Length: 235
Image 1 (cartoon, rainbow, N blue to C red):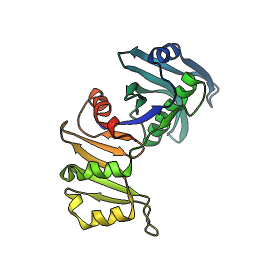
Image 2: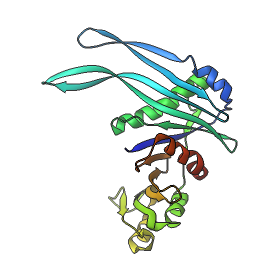
Image 3: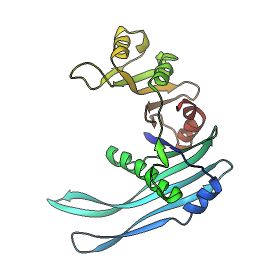
Image 4: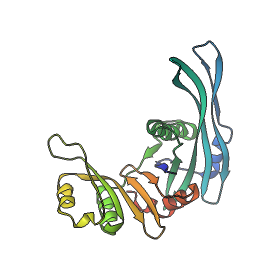
């Protein structure tokens, strides 16, 4: 099963005990009237909240209405998506990991960003207290070139070739190819898929810190990789 997650940073002072206090009773309800006239309650809340020594874990649960066609008619159905999250201190900084739900790609991106924005307002009464983080092009380049045999895929963006937005290379020994060197001269590495040797897992990382675990592994293994390996790469 593919496991994607996104990393954010909390820019305000983050007292973990106070964070738990503010989140433990968080619940919002919204009445939604369906096209058939029926009203349903859509709930957003935090579940399974727990405080450990240097981290907070919980599940962001959100109801929304999904529309689909059934026998040429538009059918509305309330659904619940859950996004587990972790808030972790690391070298005098505080990061939040949000695990994307198993839904369409666009919804994954929307929900992970929604979690960050919502918790920013709940915890700090303002937006932009929880922001995206970055891994530099240089760091991703070094990550690939330190073990080119383990690289599976590289995407380049910010390409300066007219009419070309992105470039892609796949295969082993990419660092030894002239094409790889040419692409480096004309673009920056946006996304790299590689094998993390010491863990024996295949992961993909973007510059804006979306990490995807492609190996057959558990959520705990993904979180361990982020906490122990990935956070050291963030600018």
